[in-house]
Image (cartoon, rainbow, N blue to C red; front, side, top):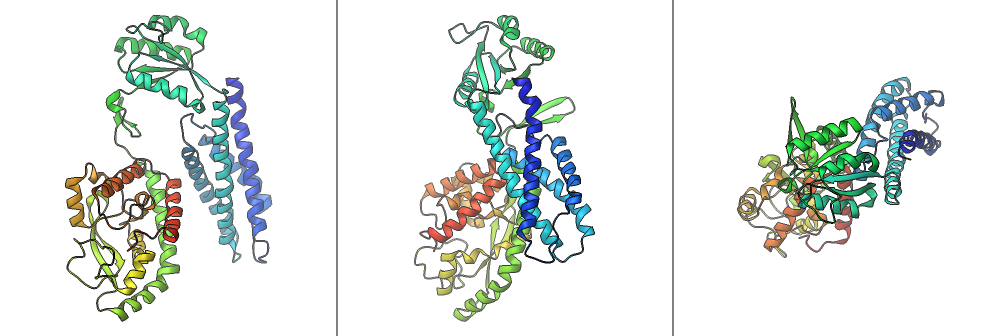
Length: 456
């Protein structure tokens, strides 16, 4: 069954890709047929594009869906393949089309591929998990060496049936109880009859026995994995670095340490901020600036020093919502604050006062989504009060963030509020994904429309 699954699944996966790709092309072409100048993808060139897509996805092994991977990983693989595909076809298609709507043709195709291939890939991922949860396509696994972390892993196997790992039991020389199948010697005798696929080794196993197990596994084509000890069982995503033949564990690596993730997030920030600046701020700044000037003397913008990535200080832009005062950096805005002007009250209630920060995003000082930046004096104060407060500066601050959409925005009145913000910021940093950014953007719009309780 195992061999049959891995023989046919990649081809079924690629065939599904091709069918969805074909549908996406037909859909994007049909969508704009009302435009007389629209020139969609040429069908004589379509087989070539199919071949390009097949080569990219097969070389990148997109059909390999990890047992323990979440669907975000599958989606990230798609984004990488889609980026390569669009770059290639843009070079061989766009230059040979001089109609006015050629860019629209390309963008409509890109959007269709993103939507339909995204739905298909995530559906395949979730379906495969369900298939494994029902007892199909499983791997037989044993754990060598008992202990706290070994027990925790065994519990994961029992709870997460969707991983498709059938736990056969422990082998241990020291512990003799009903949970153990026998000694390490017993494992060597029984492994072939059990048809073991994966061996998980406790870090407490003797080095000489570890070498024996690895040699045995190499000869019998069995995968070996080492269970990190309790000191490394932190709520973090561990990764590895290689120095020649020497490996080390990266304990506090985050998703945005990955170059592709950083480039992708920055690309989204640039495109989104440019759109806002060109189509919204171009008319909003003169309009709001006039209203601010008519009500009170002072500048249109309120420029405040705040701490950004790696604690570097940058000048954060906002529309001025208060009368000029000497306490802006040290005194938070409160409900019915007498410093707030009438137009300022409207700007703060609608969060329009934050709109100029898209200029900070374009300059690379901020991101669309990230931990909200605090003033330099507030930063100094919180750093002495909150454990791991500084860790929120590992990445660029954002116009919106996970803490804000979870209800922690506006004035900080109680210590628990800043502690909750730091915990949510830390979760975001450790678990960043493009899908999480999109979710936060959608929830931000919802918060702006529905929840205005802390907006003052």
